[in-house]
Amino acid sequence: MKKIMIINGPNLNFLGIREKNIYGNDDYESICSYIKEKFSDKKVRIDILQSNSEGKIIDFLQSAYFRSFDGIVINPGAYTHYSYAILDAIKSISVPTVEVHLSNIHEREEFRKTSVTAAACIAQIYGKGKDGYVEAIELLLKEKNF
Image (cartoon, rainbow, N blue to C red; front, side):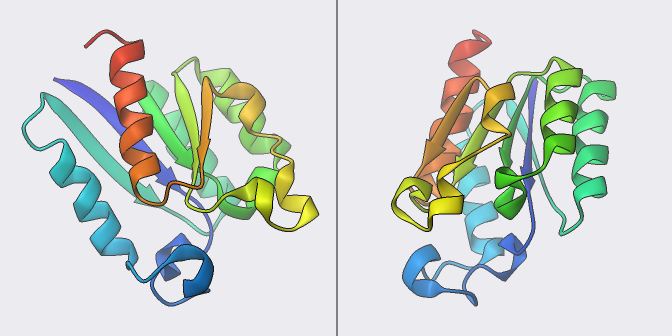
């Protein structure tokens, strides 16, 4: 069985509460359930984690390496735009990683158009809501030839 880790960054636990006009009405738990349901018939284990702390996100990334995960999907939230520490962590673990954003970051505020973490990822998916996570996992499964 292949293993995919999904890491969600700050404020994603407030989905369904925050800025519904941008992020929609689905709450965090329903999105997690949706993702797992999409892959329930496949031979893939999906672990979904969330933290509002940069250091904890780095701990998750390093854990994926030490626990031999086959791929990572990361939504770094606002850390996307300035966390060189998360960039370095992704680069250091050699686990294929896809960056995901629920909203279209290129159609929002100017600062959101820059991702420092994308440089360490094999792809960036944005503006597809919860289906962006599904697309990212499918990309990893294809990439790893599961």
